[in-house]
Length: 218
Image (cartoon, rainbow, N blue to C red; front, side, top):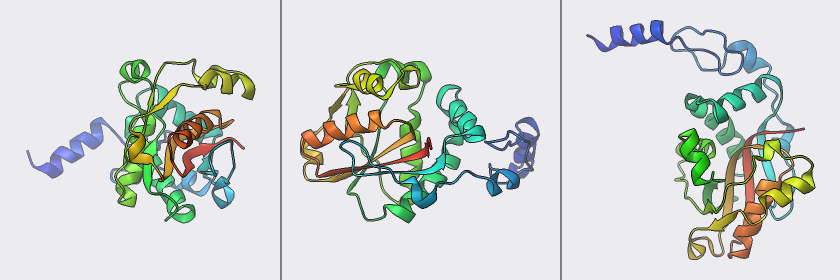
């Protein structure tokens, strides 16, 4: 069977859908439909925000409506195929706002149990696609020492901070000593997870930590 015929059959069996609104798309089209592309909730000036321990965090989109639903599917329901679309949006934001501001590209890791249950680490997938687009190989710098209650199920900012406190450990302190690190994650809400990761890295000798996420709450 010729490759073109095989591709057409695959298009019939698995029609492409917009990652946001889920409308069917013609074969070969980008994974975001024209209507959604025109109405993307893009942040202003990268949605820059400061937090405890990290110098700043930028985000490509606001975490609302169809974006929120798409990230939920990506994060919890096996939609790994969204990674290239999300990676492109995040990489573009990083290139525009943080190019030249970091030495190491990494990500906020899942604990082993949650990764095993889910089958993948959504932040790692995002970081690897971002790295491919920016010609930077992502490096694991943290591991999660213990499972904690999902931050999305934890209440106020103080509770989120207490929930995540002490959850991470630096893999190789020598590798990050004196380095500027850019951490990738899917979303930022209160910033407590990113703050704990940044605190852990700074205590281990990193010079600075910046963060970039696909989406941010307003």
